[in-house]
Image (tube, rainbow, N blue to C red; front, side):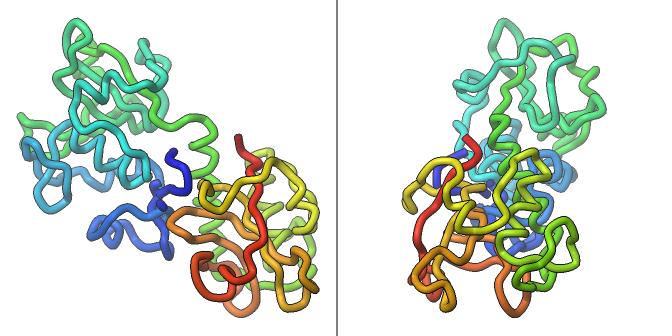
Length: 283
């Protein structure tokens, strides 16, 4: 995952939890509905096949589909099929070992001629020249031609994406200072972060000031999705009093005041002026 992104964004593209159709109309954001390679791939089924293309408007070829999906996840991969196959990413040599989101390559003698994104249940999505569109195939259709798969996102990248998706579930949940941890009817900033990260076995202290001691320091210019960002508030007397989770493109998801859980920019306005530091707890 590129630094300071997902969606600067994994890709997932955010900023304001927009729908996939909205995302597809523009550039990649960092967080949107169904921000993952499988969901994105499935929503491209039925789009046109077009040699040399990688856009919704013009269509996709095999490598163009891969390129587009991972661009939406804010991961910049090479554009050509051969370069994608030779990426410096984990090479999976057995179909029995692939997981959802892996890019599968088919061809002969380590020279790929086609590819697709594995979506689970022995199925993949690919831009098919013979079908003239993006289609879903059984992996068994190409089993004899399988030459390997690349796992584009690391395990930590996948956790970061899942954290964003988990946080989205609570958009609009009311803010209550001192909200009791362990329930989800209300949150304050630190109980929200503690709750979200606990879903992925990352234990955080209950209070934002203590959370700011976890992990390692990250400069604002190197923020990545999943980093904790900290601020002062009007009531914190110049000390840390607020925390959110960076989701890319200068945005964070957090809860504070009216509207409860929401997306906010950290590059302008109040939060820019009251930014203190950031910590990385996924490394």
